[in-house]
Amino acid sequence: MTVWVDADACPKQIKAILFRAAERTGMSLCLVANQAMQTPPFKNITAIQVAQGFDVADNEILRLAQAGDLVISSDIPLADELISKGVQVLSPRGEVFAANSIKAKLNMRDFMDTMRSSGIHGGGPAQLNESDKREFANALDRYLAQQAKL
Image 1 (cartoon, rainbow, N blue to C red):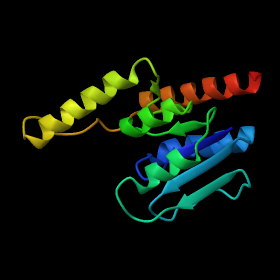
Image 2 (image 1 turned 60 degrees about the vertical axis):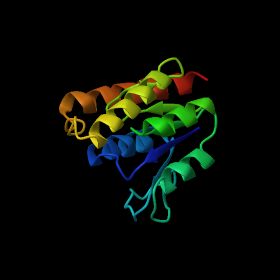
Image 3 (image 1 turned 180 degrees about the vertical axis):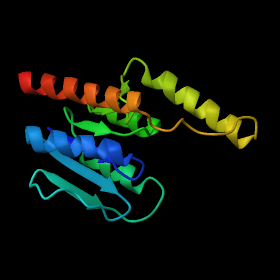
Image 4 (image 1 turned 90 degrees about the horizontal axis):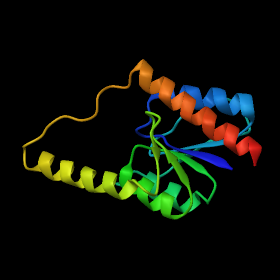
């Protein structure tokens, strides 16, 4: 089991939680991004730098992730594709993306994208807060505990 991180948009605080979990559990953690990243000096933590470009990191994660892996990403189209491969997806805010709800999230995302492009709705998600970090850490712990039972 590998935990993949869509690292270009992943907040530093969430990466720190992931680094501590990888150090504590020995899980394989791989960050994928368009830029160079610094990671702690542990064998089980790696980083892949991909070329610049739209969806290049997403496509690399999609190519590498396998059923049973976990991907950390807030990218809903990527989550949709990963779920169809049997990969579990967790947002940096602790939201578990699931097969029974991802299509509705994708539809809402597309609707909001249309609204933003027409100038009707502006802004993005709220800044990450302490509650979000706690939700993420708890969801990650649940996932790791579940994997330990397998």
